[in-house]
Image (cartoon, rainbow, N blue to C red; front, side, top):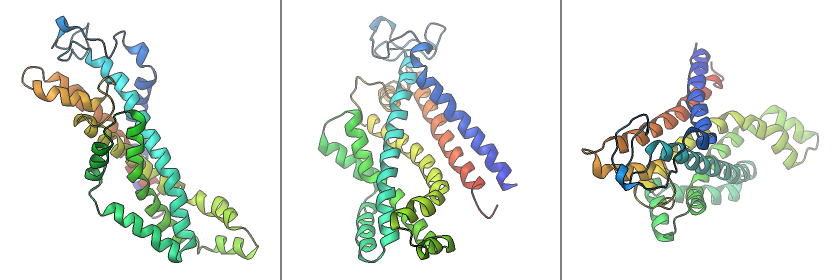
Length: 271
């Protein structure tokens, strides 16, 4: 029963994500409008056949900004999750496998990171750097993003390294690297996939929040967060400016959360 529910959630979430991914890949084919071209005489146009989602305060087509903004959001999320996962895998493996003072030092560093509210720490770093670019934003999000993966992987390895098959490999003279790569890491795929799915959703929300506050990517780069920020000043006059990017955020974040929940149900040994 639980696995059936998990399959449904996985397929539903995967469908949402697949749809957004296709929109991002084929963005130039879906619209003929430039997402940065201003046409002041077309300001605040309501949704129509000419402009499917209307235009903003500068006369820029909102649909064009959303489909091209999907590229930015997915690029940042995938980059942050990949880099954070690689760092967390190495650090968490070192802490969990070596134990002792190595584990103690690494876990105290992670505790220091978690001692600060996550978003406030990212917000502070972004404000101090004062340089808006996609690369800088990825770097800022990775500074704290690796900690959750490291803690998860460390806990899993503490459990897995005492399994019979790992102890048998150790008795046969397998090296530490061989035991990690061949016997421990393959068993981390399930938990890491679940964590990465939720991590994608959190990263997209964080990136949009920073862009909303003007600390994300450059203003010339179309993002959902900057659209929401621009639309808040015209909620009564032109609510569609904020509605459609908010809807896009809802779809992609819901998709990743459903995917994570579905994977968790399907990979749960108790089911």
